[in-house]
Length: 205
Image (cartoon, rainbow, N blue to C red; front, side):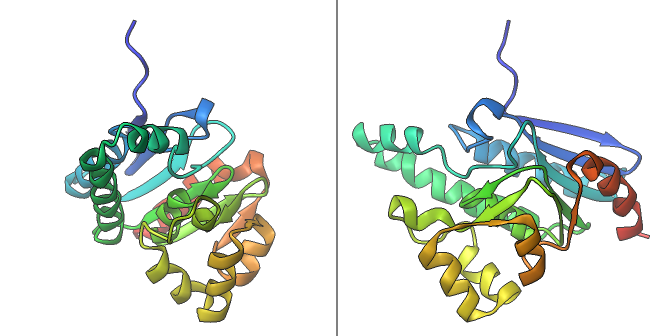
């Protein structure tokens, strides 16, 4: 039996849903997963039946960002070309979201950290479960903010707050994220899917 794909795609009632599908690793980016996300988003952009795109995660997290164990293995093997491709692929994902000719909604079903946080922030709207949190956690692993974070975050929360988020690398709970402008709306966890499906058609009418 073949393994389940790391990215699931569904189109229903004008809504194209891209679901990150590594729940056992909090949907952390692994292998070709970045390219698969970009492929899915670029495909959604061209499909006439898709009117709005929703990005979400399976399980208890939206996305934990990079799979640090996988990255450490690349460096240990000195697979620098392969590691460099990860950066290129991440850039392609964010470009696909920002250039999306249709509304893009992040449905934050749980924590979104690092590149996962910035994938959500690149979307036009962010609707969060009350179990969600979001954080610029790059500093914890000795990296500068990537996936567009240094451009996106100051424009959402201002330079001073952005500096705090980058330097302290703390996870911000959903309610606080809504208060400072990182997410648009927080809803009870069990109502997240229904709320997104309610908001999505309104966003493109």
